[in-house]
Length: 407
Image (cartoon, rainbow, N blue to C red; front, side, top):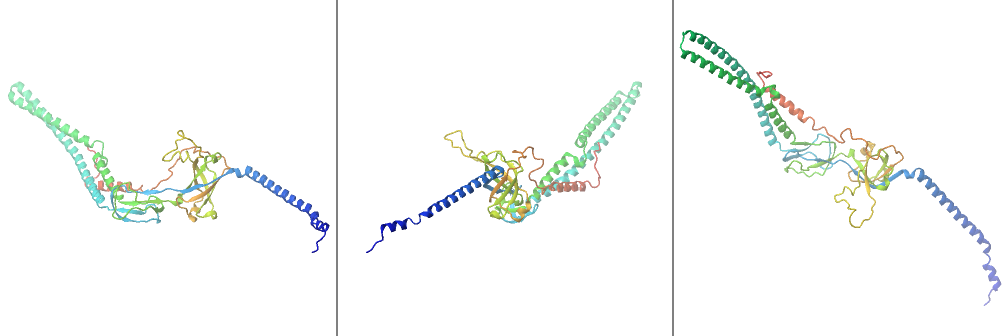
């Protein structure tokens, strides 16, 4: 077996040696280029963060919240009709629940009759005053006649034309007439006090009866329970035939168009957060496809743990510092987005607050000048009751016109 010379093998092994310096130079260039790129990237990121990035704060600890309007009865009753179910859209004033109206209708009829009877009794009081006044006038005439008879007999008695007994009878008649006048005057004053400075409609007895009618009228109206706001029905728990008491939760109405976001930011994120700053919102249900526009409405006045059922007792036992979170309310500034992409109570979301505008306040500087939420579906109830009262009073004043206080 032949073998190659050792010198030839050494030459073959040393052949690639001239290419090694070139490879090392190329690798060093790439590393230097990579270092430059990384350095430029860090510089660019630093500039971006200093000029723009640090003026944004975000959190994914944010959830959709809104008003949950509880529908509860104001009077006891038995449910005879349910007008809407879970998920149904309802309008303000729409009938949701009807209670058996039998008892309320009986009470209303009784109150109407009581008001009518009271009006007639008060009219009688005015007539009593007029009669008492006429009686006083008659008693005054009788006193004047008795005094004239007594004076005439007294002169005759001095001349002896009549006896002393006849004079005594005249004196007794005068005394009796004066006593009758005093009694009639007192009766007149008593009757006059009952109607003094009033007319029938403003008499206390009529006002009391009218108040009872209003209460009965409202109870009758309240057998029909209506939606106080526009929204969607949720949490229906009432059933037909159920006997309900005042305050029993029957269902809820949620106005989804008035929803907001409760975003829980870390306390370290609030230094530059102000009321009125713009917010971008992404709901998990739509992912990144929908970006809602919002605005910071208020910053919480305490942390979540401070208002919890069992607040932390940091002054007792071992203590571990935990970064606290403060709720920040974010409202939607474009209602059409909620119409097109509706949200539900409790959905998760991501929010990012733009902190560039530092002109706003951290806490509300002024008290509210109008109600935060209101409804007008109950405004006309008492007006209708007042119309009914006026009709009943007018109907029972027939034949007497407007009763005035004849004193």
